[in-house]
Length: 619
Image 1 (cartoon, rainbow, N blue to C red):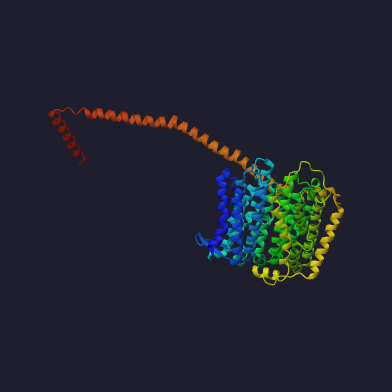
Image 2 (cartoon, rainbow, N blue to C red):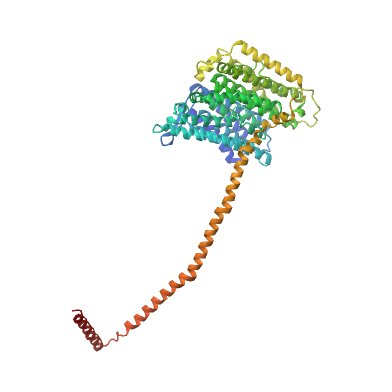
């Protein structure tokens, strides 16, 4: 069983590294290799989801590397591999032969493999390894077209923002070790054992996990990095921002639900942060005039529902939302990428009639957008009500906030549809969308319809059993009817409003269009103070440390010169005088050495005479 799990994570990781190492020589074979690996990984993930394997290998003293597949990680592993396969199918048809395809597909496989490690990790150190590789490869994928300074700057912003939040996981790991004391470090760093820590370490662990998860999932106040990440290729957005990177934080919160509950405050903070993100980023999405920016803001808002579910204890609803969102959002990003390639724009006013340009792509986009709007009978409508039932059980105000976020989903989805369904404009320079890029969109559109089934009994009860959660709140019939009716009214209102400007103050509109000014706030509160501190440290280094070192060096040189001029001269003189004296004594000592016996006899007599006189005098 462990071989199955090792193969699941090693296959995409190994193939990705191999493509990156071979480089441009593998450009022609890269799509085929990547698709073969993705199909194999999907088969392994489905098998693992049924068999629930575990794997263990030596890593550190008393801390082995542990991977495991349970209900939640099994569902997510299947979702990740399925979306990866569909996105790679689209990319194989869409990515031109002149691109560095080995690098692109290698990075995509490496990213998918690191996400699978993150999903199947059973301990914090293993989770951190997958988490770090996932962040590094996301930076490389967002900045894939690295010759464009704006794209590399966007990749840097996304990477640095998430890395700042990732420090929370290191805090959590340190606190978990400290809380373990003399106990087994393996159990204290196990994800399932984090909730058993004692205070104050429990609060530190909770805070670290929450910060890292909110940062990775682009929740408030970290949401702005997802706007910058839209500079990457559309297939990258479809993979990273639908079913993998941005949902990794929500997955972590769903997985560590007992920790949030045990802390006494983590569940409320997480639930209300998710609700606030769903509302505020929904308003941001409405204010966007760029389709990919609208979809990015909607990703933050939709993941806010998953985060709300984690805080409210609605694990089943949050998981259903995660899976349904993966299908809908990856389809929307891929369709946006197809239009960008064919029409050369992603600005909504320039996309008038885009759905009529290619009917199949337009129909698939419409299905996904209607699902995102929460309209019945599509998947996100029912999934959202399942998680909102948990919010209602916890607090009617939390339910109202979630319902407000759902209404905003209908508004921004209808806004996107209004533009792309307007009468077509002449497009003589439009490019043809390859047929191979269309079929993945059709598959995802079918998924948006089919995934409504798990939100209703008896399949929903089976999902809860697979997730090993009991007592999950179930929505009443009136909740389904209410949310569907309100979503329909909101979508109809947005359609009727059309492209007219929002009835808001100019400052409010610019604030929402600028993603609430979060990036500027980050620069003011974090970047600018850090840079000032760095400049102060550089000035201290230049003006104090450097001068101290240079002064010390100058003093040492002067001391050396004085030593050379004075001390060494005196030492040399002393040594010369000793040598001269020694030579003089040698000359005096050689004089008695004549070689004549009578002189030696006279010297002996003189010596004995002196000795006798001395003895007499001493006595």
